[in-house]
Every structure is written in structure tokens, then in C-alpha cells.
Length: 168
Image 1: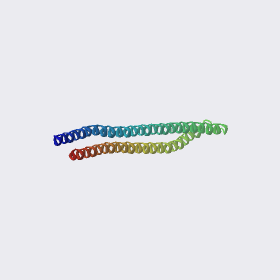
Image 2: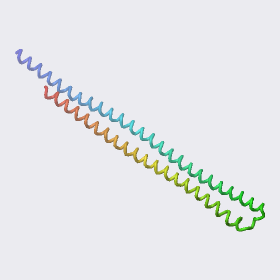
Image 3: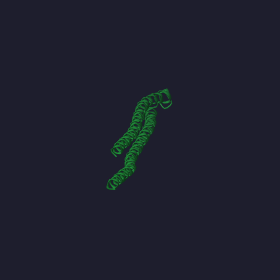
Image 4: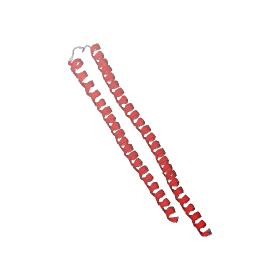
């Protein structure tokens, strides 16, 4: 009878051990899931911050361009008015220099300045777009790495629990 009692105790111990494996599996999966979700939430938060910064930089760059363009127009207008005033004071108020040459020369100079500003603006926007593209790609790769790491941890958990089950 004592051998049967001992066998019953051993079977009870094995059943308890196997029962704990299910609990360990649930706890392990929950821990892995919580860690993954925490990392993913941080990633999404960082991406939102990066996107906010990108949008702010893009807006600031555009506003700077528009301000520069307006400043160039105002400067050309003032320069033309000053030249016309000087020509008028010199008695050339109805001359071709007053009506054609001065506006043409100031228009060309203003256009050259604007082309420089426009070129710089387009270069800056291009850099912002490239950087944002790189940022999105990096975030996408990191998100894939997190998913792969989660899957690896789940496989490791299952392998460890399977090893434990074999021990029973």
C-alpha cells in the first residue's frame, strides 16, 4: 500500500508541475506582450515627436521662404521708387531710363536674388523630405525588429517550457 501511496504522490506532483507550466506560459506570454507593447508605444511616441518636428521645420522653412520673397518684392519696389525719384529730380521723369531701363534692371536684379532664395528653399525642403523618409524607414525597421524580438522571446519561452515538460 505504501508503494501505491508513493506512486499517487508522484503522480500528484507531476500533475501539479504540469499545471504550473500552463500558468508559467500565461505569465511569460503576458510579460513578453507587455514589454513589446511598452516598446511599441515608446516607438510610436518617438515617431509622433519626430513627425511634429518635421512638420514644424517644413512650416518654418516655407514661412521663411515666403517672408524672403515678400522682402525681395518690397525691396525691389522701394529700389525702383528711389531710382525713379532720382531720375525725376534729375529731369528724366519721362525718359526711357525712367520708364523702361530702370524697371528692367531692377526687375532682373530682383529676379536673380529670388532665384537664389528659391533654390535654397527647394534644397532645404528636399533635405527635410529626405530626412523624413529616412526617419520613417528607420521607425519601420525598428518596429519589425520589435516584432521579431517578441517572436523570438515567445519561441524561447515555449522551448524552455517544453524542456520542463520533458523533465516530468
